[in-house]
Length: 329
Image 1 (cartoon, one colour):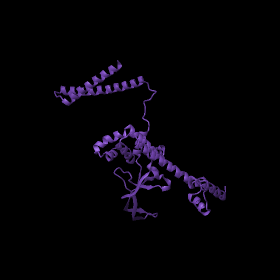
Image 2 (cartoon, one colour):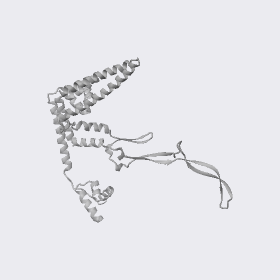
Image 3 (cartoon, rainbow, N blue to C red):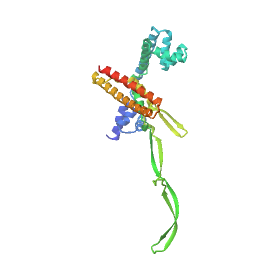
Image 4 (cartoon, one colour):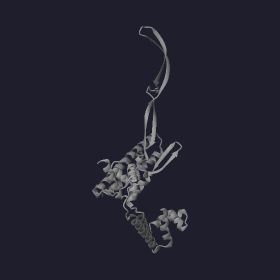
C-alpha cells in the first residue's frame, strides 16, 4: 500500500467514526500525521443521530434516578431513615451521616450509624438509588472493580527509572623517585600519581552514585498517579494507595472455604497431631524447668519463679493429656 492509498483508507475510516489513535495505529503513522491529514484535506464525518440518542438516553437515566428517589420517599422508612439514606449516598460514611441527620455525638453515631446501615430497608433503598446513579453515569460495577484492581497491581517501576553506579575513589600522591636511563645514568624526578584509596583491610574503596528520573508522560498510565509535586529535594510522584485498593478487593472476593477433598477424619487426625506436638513441646519445657528447680533445691536455694513455672507447665500438660484422651474416646 502506497502513501496515497494509506491516506485515502485512513479518510474512510475517519468518516466512518474511527478514532485518531486507532487510525494511527492501523496505518503505522503518528497521531499528528492523522490530524494534519484531517485538517489539510478537510475530512468530514457523516452526521449521525448519536448526539440525540445520548441526550434521550441521559434523560431516561435521569428519570430512573428520580424514580428511585420517589420510591424512597414512598417507602415505609421513617423521615430520619430516608434522610440517612441520601446523606450516606452523598458522603459514604455511616458515622458522619448519622451525626448529620440525627445530631448525635460521635460516640453514639459510631455505633448507631453502622447499625442503621445494616437495616434491610435502608440497604435496599441505598442499593436501588446507587444502581440508578451508576446507570446514569454509564458506569458498571465491573468498571470500578477493574480500576481498583489496576491500582492494587500498580508498579512504581513503570513510572520511574533508578539505579546506581560505582566510582573508584583515588587520591593524588606525589613522590620523589630515582631511576636510571638507558645509558645507566641515575636520574631523579617528582612523580604525581592517582592511587586507589584503600580501607583498613586493604580493599579498594568505591563511592556509589544514585540516579532517579521520571519516565515520559506518554509512556505511562497516568490514571494511576495520585499526585505529582515539587518537593524540597526534587520532584515527587505518588501512586494511588495500593494497600487500600487491595483491602477493597479482598472484601469483594469470596472467602476461602475448607478444602472439600479433606475428610473430617483427616482433619481430626491433623488436629490431633498438632495437639500431640504441642503437648510434647510443653512436656519438654516442663522437664527443663523441673531440672533447674531440682538443681537449685540441691544447692539449698529455691527460686520461687522457676518452681511456679514448673508447676504451671505440669498442670497444662495434664490438661492437654485429658483433652487428648477424651477425643480418642
